[in-house]
Image (cartoon, rainbow, N blue to C red; front, side, top):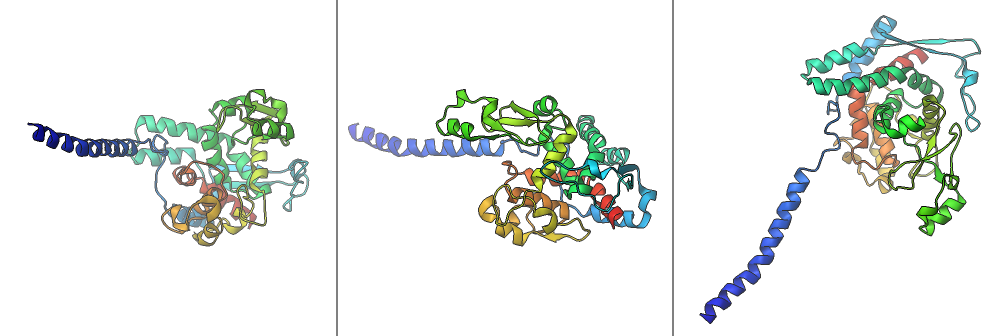
Length: 339
């Protein structure tokens, strides 16, 4: 009997740890397979296509006859900040550039309906379409003067502000989540972990911002810039994305717009992805599974390379927004008008 009990005890001693390990592994797999997809719930078509090429050819062939939206650019002297002088781009005071854009809300809605989207998903898409309708002109004007693709600007605005509905956007007109940076006193308190002692005066902001506001992001003490209008937020966003540097580092975005220009042919992201790999942690194929992609996908990958956002799928979200809502039409229209 004693011998039998010893056998049973030996079995249990070996079985229990293995059983516990299997339960833990099984639980981890259960959680992993049910972790919410960052892209789930967003009204998106999750695919990387070449439909923009068809739009490019249509625009070249039909020009303004295809236009469903008109953007007028004028008064270049009003553009610019104390940090960034106005760029006239050849316009003279009083002169106007009229751009016909082949983007139509009804056409996008029909496309999504034809894809079999539910009423709920179409309603969610309607919120995005309303945001695009409202800020399309500003994104195109901003692209003309600053060189940041209108498609990228609008996609980021939708993501960062929840299409203008986030608390940060409604309270501060900050549509791109641009943070205020701690000044000398703020850095001292942060280093000493005196978080409760931090005040708005411990953070700096840049024009056209007029102040800061506390909102929880990475930390409860984070401060974000406050703008008089949403259009000021767009201006500040472009200033940020023109930030240049001579070495590959986080926060360096100015190179994107020349390395990955708006064009019909696909672009190879390999060289820049390798250059920024130590910064981003992404190998060239890790972004989309392929390295030759449409220009807007290359630009979205460039933002991720330079550490614009912590979300692992940030670049994919931008691309799927641009493809779903055909924001590339804005870039094509302005590129055609300028050439």
